[in-house]
Amino acid sequence: MRIILFFLFLFFMCTPAGFSQITFVKDNPYKKGNFYIYWGWNRAAYSNSDIHFKGDNYDFTLYDVIAKDRQSPFSAKLYFTPSTITIPQYNFRIGYFFHDKYNISFGADHMKYVMQNHMGDGYQNVHIDGEIQNGTQYDGIYNNDTINLTGDFLLFEHTDGLNYENIEVRRFDVLFSRKNFQFAANEGFGIGALIPRTNTTLMNNARYDEFHLAGYGTGLVLSLNMTFFKYFFAQMEWKGGFIHMPDIRTTMHKSDRASQFFWYSQYNMVFGANFRIPSKKNSEK
Image (tube, rainbow, N blue to C red; front, side, top):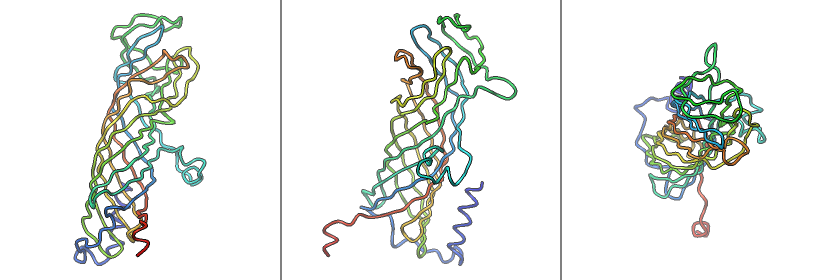
């Protein structure tokens, strides 16, 4: 709600004469040959997920596991200091307009995925199928049994993070314009790789936390954009799609792996700039 109010406030500040003065765009700041770059932050939500764990002495699946994101509390030092700006959940993207309405871009969507050990006054309880024979208190054969996700059994987080490195194609439509202000919508789709740094503690194994190419994802994006003075913009985005990671590292032992599939939604607020790299031909004129 605060983001929506922010957009409405800026819009009416830039159009004090009201809608009657709005004209259709004649000078589009987003043209073929233009570039853009942005940085911002996100909140994310995930569907429940079945997670399959497999190693030399165990092979089991946890069903309908609940996870949430983990956004860092705001502080200017954390969010804007170069050494710490990648700690919060962030979005970075750079794009190129290969057509007056279409652009292709590369981006990094840094989300965080945290399996919830605690739920309310107790632990998250899930169903489990499979077998564990590694000399722990959890040894046994499970057939649709219930297990508490206590910390000594499993900690499972993609918190540095759930890194979705992706390529997107978007269509950009300027809806209306005034001098030094444009309001636009853009929509598109993307596909990319998941390179999480998964923080895992699994039964008696030591904590593991290394980057690893774990899978892929895809999704759709819808955005509202406000551009000021043709160069600077604020943009509100919604993304949604799925993530499939069939090869997640869980311990220092290469035979220990996990896999999961889930749907995600991402809500972003980003700020950026449009620019054009002068060609040699243009600079000589």
